[in-house]
Length: 354
Image (cartoon, rainbow, N blue to C red; front, side, top):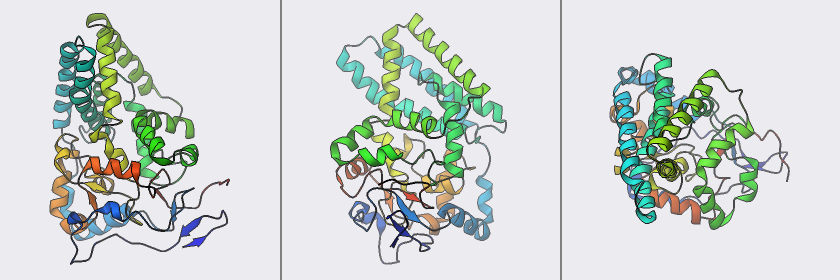
């Protein structure tokens, strides 16, 4: 490492693909003990390397072209989306009249789980992996929002495309923390509050840092979701809408399933920019834990990502991975070597002020 013109440590070496040695089992090793390495604490880890997913994608396609059988659409995502929204409406009518204690508990346990699953389906719909038709995928994403109460699907899809196209490029990747987050989010209390406010950071950060002009689909998204919200208030009651919104908030904040937002790209291991979660929670989060595979091949639906891992195990099974979302959350909050700065960027900062 060397200091660049901004006084920041810059790593210009080419890391290649992170792999373990043959005599070490990463699954039996705690990746959270590897966070103490030389780093900036006022800026991200600057590296001069090609995006690892592009490198691995080329290698895999060259050696294993047969994996292309996994590409394409999976209409089962649509059936799941329809079912989850209808079940969420049933939960609203069932739980919204309970006492405040059970109101909150059911929103956290049942509502948040379903709302998060709908979020993952929206993620897949915005990659157009359900139908061949882009229009139908967008309409399904809007439908999924009905079970969340917040019109976010189309806007999320636009910014999420930038996350894949400009992964870890400052001001272009909306998933990277902002300069204000880098400056002020320090210490366990503020990091906990950051996690508690994740829906607001992830929802507002892109439109503040790099606003895009709304399009017709976003208008349809907003109008239709607000109309469904009105129907919920009119036929079930305002407490029904509150229960739904609380479920959506829990599903993307201090909830074990929402921790994938931290686990995916924060640098727990030196020079590694994307991580898998391998564990039982993938059943409930619809394989969002197979995040390295997803970034390598975003055209593969969520349901087939485990098959990709099985077809080319030499590329994935030797990578450090998360196996417990609760441990990931605790490590992020209480480890002084982790914070908003624990991200990799592949270029020097556009600007920097001490």
